[in-house]
Image 1 (tube, one colour):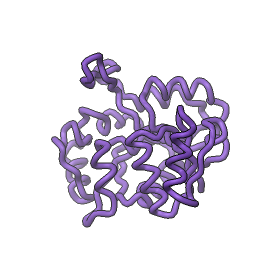
Image 2 (cartoon, one colour):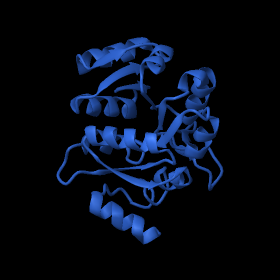
Image 3 (cartoon, one colour):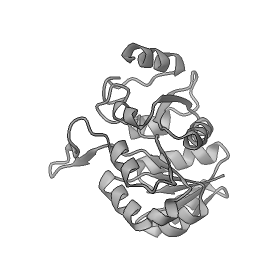
Amino acid sequence: MTTAIIGTGNIGTAVARHLVDGGERVVLAAREESDATALATELGELASAASVEKAITDADVVVFAVWLDTLKDLIAQHADLLRGKVVVDPSNPVAQDADGRFVRTLPDGQSSGSVVAGLLPPEAHFVKAFGTLGAESLASEANRTPRAVLFYATDDDQAAAAIEGLITAAGFDPVKAGGVDAALRIETSGDLHQFGGLNGKVLDAGEARTALAAAA
């Protein structure tokens, strides 16, 4: 299986690094192709760089590690190529204001996951994942003992199977939070997000299931 990672910022780089460490093949794309090429060179033979269009075409799974507004634009540009692909959305409904502070970009109660899912062609297999930890924790907490959890949300069995394999390969334990309607819980300020109800804590599998049960 080949995973395209669109975006080589903190999240995209961490996901790419962990997947390659776990033996997964990745193809990287970025606004500046030189950034993708440099990261692919650093990661070694399991990584390559390509244009966004070619990365999506060549991949089975596409991780859009970009800001929400950029993600919406990319879906509009490449919707036909996403048919039949597993599409992974780590985005959070925030952006930086002129002072560098993070501000919410969607109305309260609306998740970026629900927005993204609604923009995809029906043949795409959508899953919300890789955005439940801050970038620093995502980079540093892989393969610890006990393993840290990454929550995911999907209504699609094919997407669930794919993301469970990728999260495991990346050095984390996958725990399903629910369907797409649970995406809000695993986004920034949600009760299952590191910078929401978890107050900075990184959970292991037992703690994650306790948190899910407590909110049920």
